[in-house]
Image (cartoon, rainbow, N blue to C red; front, side, top):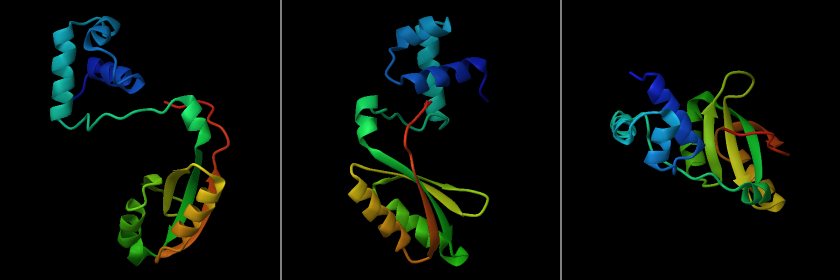
Length: 142
């Protein structure tokens, strides 16, 4: 069970997972030991599954990102998911409702790479149709 302090701690860590424990404690107005024990408990409970980095806006702007909506043959969904999981440029894959079954979040360094990646995805056995949307700009991200 998470309380308000747990949620505020998670919000703070999502803003900056490298923020020192003492700074988090000041920000949340609790003791450093409280922050440490809460983080440890959230990790042990699996609420915090890991830590990652966020690319600088300069680096992120150089990457080409897209969302690829994917329609899949129902009997081949598991195989398609496993095949997409093997492609490192596929950063996330979500099951969705609506006209498509899945949406992949992909990124490459060049438009040529993006074109080849979208072709590679479309060629996977079981994928019936794809629709790609290149991300032009990020207005905000959390």
